[in-house]
Image 1: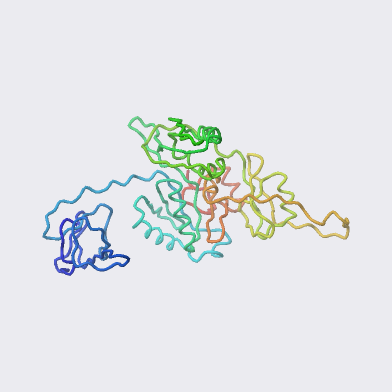
Image 2: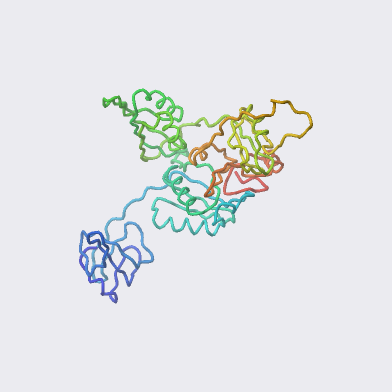
Length: 394
């Protein structure tokens, strides 16, 4: 606001430079611990306002009679990572969440767009989901957690970086400056893992007190899923911060998981008998009595290809029993993934199912036969489809 103006002068209205004329705008200021409506405001005041319907970051407020020039609008950096937010089409849809429809998902994202200036939403023109872009994996993960706590239930795809092309047609990808403060004894494992993720070491400084500051330039896709791994490697003692510095040349493929998924072919509660046999060949994600469904990922295979299994299989009852054989079974502790870990772990033909009570991983095409037929024609890559009967377009 460039000069004071009586707030009660509603007939004159206020002009939002760069948008439209607005009337009935009210201003509040803070007095101690209370918020009171202001009779007048002046340049430099920090105020709250209510009334304008269309307002954007960088708009300038002035009276209609005032001919003040608008301030230079703030430049909001463009998103670097995108994901698909899809309707949950699994058999457990609606069991945990209260908002499961696409309309409710869009309404929540539209409300977020008003306050989250770095977020973008692209309507796919389909009945199954939308494309959401943000400033990084953590930016989108925070949004997903907030929506989950509000009772929404949906599926998300693996995060993908937003690339560009230069004038010569070369692919460019977002690059970030990564600064890490880490204890000296953990310096080696941090540098080693960031090098695998195509990070380029810039500087290493020893600040004393057994603390080393390491600076990298690393592709944004190299940071996807690394935050939780970093905390594990440094035993929670490391600090990392990153910022976008621009677009650079494509740095090649980053090695992803080289193991397949263990996919359930049945729906029902998992049994200890079935899990005991599976854990010899895979790392299991579920525990006995936990409900699973057809197409859900219940473990990580020890081999590169996917493995179908029936985790609900029960032991056949007979009259022959040993006195000690069936007293109990020994099961490994199931591996539980956080949201960020699940987002990085899934492949391009898989989704993360997010509900208020659970985080599950599943195949985009739930039915095993339809999934097999689709893989014969072309690779399945999530491009805005949920559990479809035909492969999504590449």
